[in-house]
Amino acid sequence: MAVTVSIPTILRTHTGGEKAVEASGATVAEIIDDLEARHGGLKTRLVKEGTLHRFVNVYVNDEDVRFSGGLEAKVSDGDTVTILPAVAGG
Amino acid sequence: MLQIRRDLVDEMVAHARRDHPDEACGVIAGPEGTDRPERFVPMTNAARSPTFYEFDSAEQLRLYREMDGNDEVPVVIYHSHTATEAYPSRTDIALAGEPGAHYVLVSTRHPEDIELRSYRIVDGEVTEEPVEVVDSYLFSHTGADDVPDRG
Image (cartoon, rainbow over all chains, first blue to last red):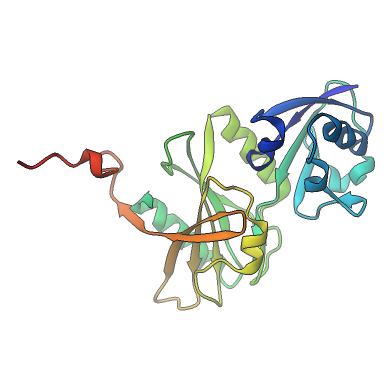
């Protein structure tokens, strides 16, 4: 299942500057593994100890996956996955 | 250096005052490649806290899609400190994810004396920069090359 993944500026060093790349998988976890296979170094920026980083937002279409299963959230053919670093601080 | 219109500075300060004692946050978007802040976008602080801020995640997705569609980037990312100085906290530095942005801090700890300062935060390194407030970008010079030679 092929999806388009939108990559934030700060992670584009891993994708040769590309804003959007293709990946395949049935869940967010599988998409991230596929991304890692194609663009090494991305996974550790997104996943820590088996869960998504607290301050990385991942969306499947319009849905923040934090509210729909996290890494286990389902992804379908043609979906858009968007990665955005949370804008946060103290 | 951050060059910014006076009305945008006023908007940030007004937002910070309005949300005090909670932290206020937002973006000023501008055309990609210009470094010119133009479109003021106040954001919801999903943390609603006097010591922390975080953009509401759904609002952030809408904003970033809008900016993508308009060929805009977040030229300024601002937030307020309500009890401390306008200097990035350790958390601000650890979480800064936009190396191209000017991080503007507004301190409302002294309501009669609002402090506003700007920084670059890249790879954990903070660099303060001067802020030049202008009435319009049209007539303001943007660098030494724009100053006519005197002979």
